[in-house]
Amino acid sequence: MFIDEVVITVKAGNGGDGSAAFRREKSVQFGGPDGGDGGNGGSVFFYADPNVNTLVDFKYKKIFKAQHGENGQKKQMFGKSGEDLIIKVPVGTQVRDLQTGKLLLDMHEKKETRMLLKGGRGGWGNVHFKTSTRKAPKIAEKGREGAELQVKLELKLLADVALVGYPSVGKSSFINRVSAANSKVGSYHFTTLEPKLGVVRLEEGKSFVIADIPGLIEGAHEGVGLGDKFLRHIERCKMIYHLVDVSEMEGRDAIADFEKINEELSKFSEKLAKKPQIVLANKMDLLWDMEKYEKFKSYVEEKGYEVYPVSVLLNEGLKEILYKTFDRIQKVEREPLEEETDIREVLQELNIQKDDFEITQDEEGVYHIEGRIVDGVLAKYVIGMDDESIVNFLHLMRSLGMEEAMQEAGIEDGDTVKIANVEFEYVE
Image (tube, rainbow, N blue to C red; front, side):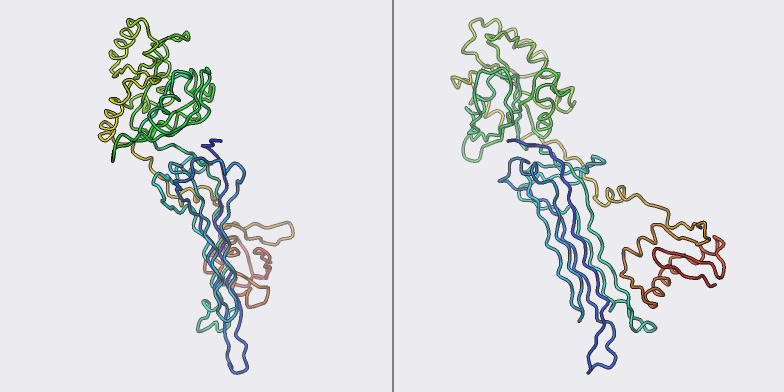
């Protein structure tokens, strides 16, 4: 089964929490803070595996998570970092953000490894919070949460030449003849169900890759038949072989077929229509009236295309074309790669920011302080319910400008203020 488009969810590992432990030994009079840092969460990588040809494995598994970091321990022991996750994809796979459609990774090089999501950093233990005035801090840092993202994987085959044409014009026979692709051959009037890649080997050091692109029937760009499902595979090819049945023995019209296929290419993308194209007039061995071929040849050449008479069945006229193709593709540059978007921009867009903080008063006269800064502090620090932890928490909030905001909101001595689950009486 050939699968070339799939949606998956990827998540980097969370960082482990720092420890708020203390050293307690008889021989050590002033033990002090002793909590170790949490381990970093595992990151998410993609690997372009030349041995993988389809995205079919992602049809059955949709969620991929890297390992979380472990929490820090007493005796300043660091938590173990989470194991990275490496996702293997075929060469030519593009990774896009599902929500925005932006390109994040383009895995076009064999065996390249690229990081998509970095694991969350491990939180600091309480040893980092010791100061000259705070000898025994009971506060530690939580591990950062690993980012989570829905992405769309799109496979674009990396071939030098795309083979297009109507069904039953001989495309499968052609690619079997010039390579070792082993496509199924039959006189059916539908289309090959999946793209086929073949390597054309001319001689030592001279070879190129050709792809049989299915799905090209009238209306393909709008989804008719297999639709535009496979048209994108042509985008990265350097040139196009357009195979046409000029024998017209099965009721086809060579000129009409030629025009309809080119129309589908141009409707899908102007870039496809402008790619170098060689027209192969196939089934010359079945053609009794040479005037048909001459009429077709004149028409196509007037459009600016080269035409070559061939018989795939008898292997006539193919060798010369293959050598010319090899020479030509050396001079044609592949389409420039689409610019990738920095993953940090996408994650920032997905993170719906609230106001820094908001102060409201309920019916009982209690002031509530909520917002992004409050959530950020609560997410970042391990805060106990003992007096010292609460004092540390309030010091943190004061350093972020909370006290000035409370005064501006009209909070006075004796008013009750609640931040998250911490409730206290305000004193100027």
